[in-house]
Image 1 (cartoon, helix red, strand yellow):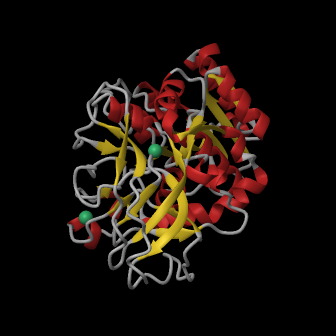
Image 2 (spheres, helix red, strand yellow):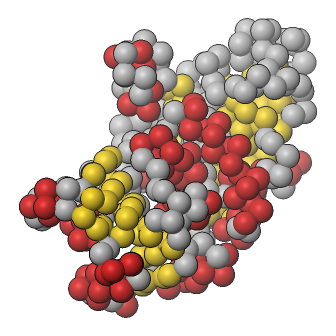
Length: 377
Ligand SMILES: [Zn+2]
Ligand SMILES: [Zn+2]
């Protein structure tokens, strides 16, 4: 309830000041937590494919900005009126917490009438569209502290959910949760194909396995990624797209499904437009095709819509995630972490080496760079 415990000591953060340029370290004087807000000490912050796009100037965002839309930390200060997390659990200074990257407006058509806040067009997103030039300045996770504004979805980490496990999948975890639990769910016993072995693909494969899929066929690459997936038990069958043709992949999937019918449930998590026509081929008649990976606009592709009709295919898109998905995802981390060694996906970097982390992600040297901040470093 105090508003004076935050020291005025400036905190370190990594700031994007110009597109196509390295991030620069900066120091910012933090504000005390106002009513409804929380000041948190960041302990772990994920580096995501989106951050590479932001740095390259592929999205319209205000500069300067402290990047970091995926992070976990510890409550440093609770503003007046903040007593519980999003699930009603009591919240205290020192609690390890996760927060959702965005705050929907709560007023638009999608927030109110449609009840689809992931489609809100005026979401405030930490680490993306909140400039560090504007109060409260500390609005990104690549920083020693973050100011969690009123309306943020904050959840205390459940037992069995270490910060590394929560951040290992980053925003891919709640993204896959929204797709596979809010939009369409595989049924127990389904044969599931996941196209793509990046974080969204791996998260989708794991969630399908937890949901009781009879078999998960992971179609992706390069080989080292599939090897990591195989060694962690993510997916049952692994098909390397760099070592196979589309015809070979189709033959392989048909051979792996009962009666050679094709997959009951196909998830696209590649971001490549051409994968969509192939996904339609891999699904059985009456199956479900969930398109999750087309996050940036890479243009058009050739596909034959006859097969959507002929197969009576259920084709669904899924965009981002809501507060409920974020909470649901964090709650599922202990079960995920028990079955899969999530921390094996992560490579740690100190905050000051954020540029190296971005470079290593760009070159594919690491699957999931995570900046470890402050005392956790
Ligand atoms: Zn809205
Ligand atoms: Zn992300």
